[in-house]
Image (cartoon, rainbow, N blue to C red; front, side):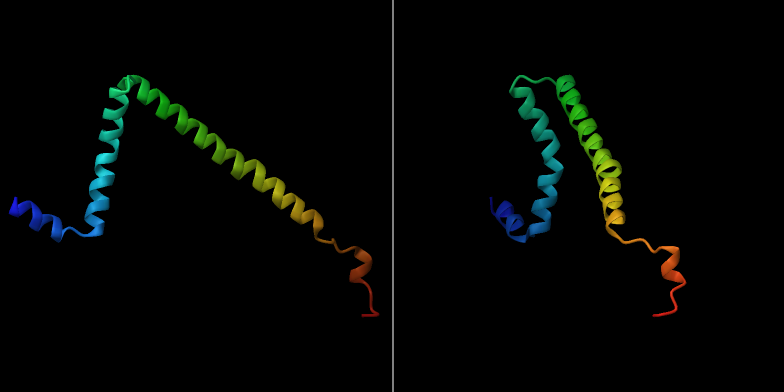
Amino acid sequence: MVIIEEREKSMTHNDIVDMAVKSAAPVTVSGCTLAGIGLPDWVLLVTIFWILLQAGILIRDKIMRDTYHRRQNDKVPKETPDDENDTDK
């Protein structure tokens, strides 16, 4: 018991976070299995989530940003050939 207490005192915040991250996936799989979701179903759900996430990122990057940049370019006044030849300036 004394060894465990000494080890807990010597653990830093990074060690605790590292252990939590390493145990997150097995704990999630075990929890889903206990809840009645088998491993194949769990993999299917994660795959669907991943595909939707990637589709959302694609839509954000390709469609939303292009539309935003196009609108910004439309707001910038364009120079006409007459402006370049003006000597009154």
